Amino acid sequence: MSGREPIASVGSRPIMAAWLALGLLLAACILSGPADAVERSPRGELKRVLLLHSFGREFRPWSEYARDIKAELERQSIWPLDVQEHTLLSARFNNPGPEAPFVDYLHSLYEGAPPDIVLSIGAPAARFVQRYRGKLFPDTPTVLTVVEQRLVNRFDLTDNDVVVSVRNDFMAAFDNILRVLPDTKTVAMVIGASPLEKFWIDEVKRELKPLGDRVGLVWYSDLAFEEILKRAAKLPPNTVLFWGLMSVDAAGIVYEGDSALRSLHAVANAPIFSYQEPFFGGSTVGGPMQLTKDTSRKTVDAVMRILGGEKPASIKYETIEFGPPRYDWRELQRWSISESSLPAGSEIMFRDPTTWETYRWQLLLIAAVILVQAGLISGLLHERRRRQVAEVESRQRLAELAHANRYSAVGELTTSIAHELNQPLGAILTNTETAELLLKGTSPDIDEVRQILADIRRDDQRASEVIRRLRSVLRKTPFEVKDIELNDTVREAIGLVAAVADGRRIALAYMPASVDLHVKGDPVQLQQVVLNLIINAMDAVSDADKKKREVSVSTVRAGNQAEIRIADTGPGIASADLGSVFNPFFTTKPQGMGMGLAIARTIVEAHHGMIAAENQPWGGALFTIRLPIIR
Image (cartoon, rainbow, N blue to C red; front, side, top):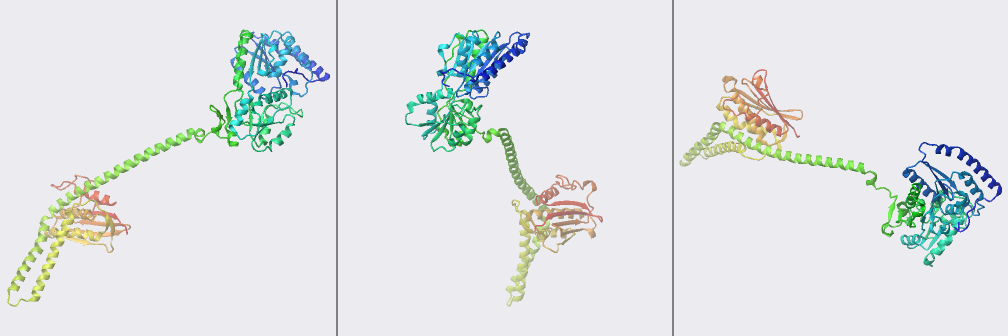
């Protein structure tokens, strides 16, 4: 619409008559029915608001302004509101007819019961109100809103009018296009063919003259929308689309809502720009634009003040300019527009939420679980480290205690060891003296001397073996695990106590297994265990009849385990003491400390084995050591 021409309605007389008849009928219903009923409400504070649309209730961008204004009115109003909406249909047509029938229709509705306030949406509605206020509602305050400042008829404004105007800054809109897409050469202008849209074609051309040859403008106002879609699908490179209005195309087809824009967006091979927020969000790239909230806020403020009794003439507002630039993140991604090219202070909307934003609580929960697990693992590792240190220290203490225990055991064997050493040493001395005497003779018997030397060598080896065994028992070494053959290990331990057994008149028998028994362990400590058990067994049979002083040691294989069995013919262990014999400081010996068997159990368990004590049916005790076989 030109903004200077009268706004007309449908032009045929039959249609005019239909308008008038329909208006009279509705007027009768309204004046005699609901309106009167509401007036008789107990509160008596009803405020009637006449909302006049320029194109229709669902024509963007005006429909979005109207929707926001109504919602805000309902929210802020302290009075019950009766919002009555009408549409100036004539603005839809390329060749509008006379407006008289619509004027008569409104006159019939509000004669004698004018609204408390008239609210016009858009320039066509504002011009209509200004032109026919004298006939329709001469004393009713009017708020002319969502009207571009160039379309405000200021000569017809009265003291009963409040204007909420906007300014479309087309130069700012095109500067934005050239900023975000500096290679742009052509802008295809999508705009309709109604009088209002024709007016804006002239205004845009005039305002963009400073651009000169910087960018070319191609106008689609003389095309049917179907043809516009075909061209939009085949635009050359460095071209963008500028969406103005599309109320009605050159073929006279009316487009409500944003259906036309959505159709254009679906086929266009170039980005679409616009300066209207109602078209932003799903179809246009964005930029500086008229923000609905700015206009709605001032409009509702004016309505509330007027309904509250304030004079319209005292209410003045500055023209509303474009708000800060807004951009649709989805369109920026689609057309590969870098965010770095956007003006400072730009707001990017509709950004796809990041994984953090979408799953924030889930990620926090997972992080918390991971932290808890990390803490638990750290604690377990720390505890494991402490346990390993404790095990090392325990083994060291065990080795020290076992070493002390071995000294104690050897102390008991001192007489036997001395006797064991004296025999070969005495024999060596005797043989040596005999050899000297033979050599002093005039013709020594060389064969005899040779036999004496052989005896000396044998006795020396015997003494050396006793010393070797003693040193192996007394040496202080850390716990050392290695592959050992159990039969030989037990045999060496028995060798240390054999002389003691002979001195005590005790029969000490050893029956090794017929097969090799390979286990992992420390041979010195295992020998100590065997040694302690044999000494205990000899102590147990010391008071027995001389014919029954027997201690037997045997090794056998039982499945995957090797067993060392040490049995005696003594009185056995008291039934009450069987469960306590391996406890520290438990002893049945008058001079004992009760640590021998406790140390023995500790050593065996350190070798992943077990030790048990029981009484034999025929008398005497039986100690069994079980160790895992490795091969």
